[in-house]
Amino acid sequence: MRRFFFDPERRHGDLVRLDAVESRHIVKVLRLNAGDSVEMLDGSGAVYPATILSTERAVELELGEQLEFAEDSGTPLFLFQSVLKGEKMDVVVQKATELGVTRLQPVQTARSQGGSDDVRKRERWQRISLAACKQCLRPRLMEVAAPLTVKNFQCDLPEGTLKLFFYEEEREVGLRELAGELAVAPAVALFIGPEGGLTPAEVDAARAAGWRTVGLGWRILRAETATISTLALVQYLCGNM
View 1 (cartoon, one colour):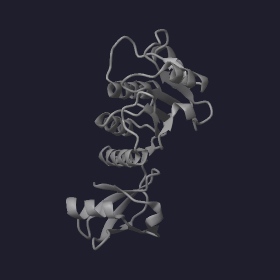
View 2 (view 1 turned 120 degrees about the horizontal axis):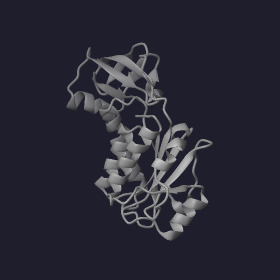
View 3 (view 1 turned 45 degrees about the vertical axis):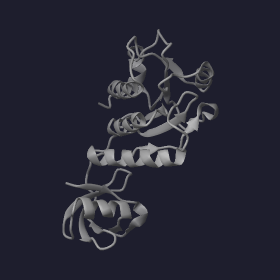
View 4 (view 1 turned 120 degrees about the vertical axis):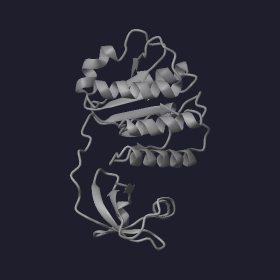
């Protein structure tokens, strides 16, 4: 069944009018017509069966009764990702969405290579995440926050969040040593650096903000590989996979 997201503010009773982007996709790309059945998601976890009523100008649909859906109730996972260059960051956004990250917080660090146009980059990442939600049938959108810097490292996280900062110089503590804490943590936040690593000043700032350093062992990983593998391991240890 085809799935699409709609803005709850565009809902009037059981009727929904889609925006231009989703309407164009339905009509021009998928060539769906009035009478076709789809499923609609409001981005907060609700899923509805729907019937297309009209494809003129904007697509209009009628929603049915909300479907029962197994909502992801696992440990919330927050990813603080140093901005990577070009397609590397796109891959991280896509895979973070698939792996169930609750919120992606991009971080501009001294050695980030991703440029400085924060508005356009965030819009791109939101589009990539939305597409990934559709592909993996994720009913709740991953939040993509506005980029911040380590100098202004204000973490809006739930109380008791286990905050792990992955640092290549850490040799004593790895995920294996933290398995027990991850299994019972109310929420987990991961801070992962850029291609060139973090500066000593940034490491000090992270530690001062309450982050605990963790190592990934002796293997040398590409930046995007480090993030994806870490997310999968942490989700497993938290019982989310």
